[in-house]
Length: 221
Image (cartoon, rainbow, N blue to C red):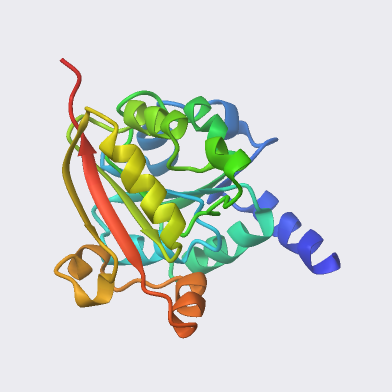
């Protein structure tokens, strides 16, 4: 507990973590480029970012883009925040909030790309609406993304992957869908840049194949 409290104190003092109580927290919606990054570079959001390895990995590879990791767990965000500080990365930040509340922090079309990396699969049937690839969340993500931009999912969980594909098949606004059940032996591998989170390494060590999909929402006419 003491270790967690120390991490909470650290992120409370860091500029690269936005959370309740900080001035930008209530002003950032629609203003990420102007108030936080202070540039006009495209914005990629990683949902359920956990320890932030993916956001940091992308930021280090693509200095001409901005990256925001979103999670509710402060001790996890401390890790990503620390990695960013250690690497002197100014094009990555972290937002501490529930993903269900994400529309309070981004305006429609403010986001250029969304990654969802190893989310909680919510295996119980009664939790289906809480899965981050359920219709209600997908409708939110569609609003946030610029027209024609990609949503990407990485997961080790086969039932969640199957569920997501089934739900996408029911939609009429999906295009350019590509997917694989074995990322590292597929032609889609290069799209993920071989960035591996601690959870991915753990699941891979257990013999789990990494699943990946990406698609675009068809612009509404």
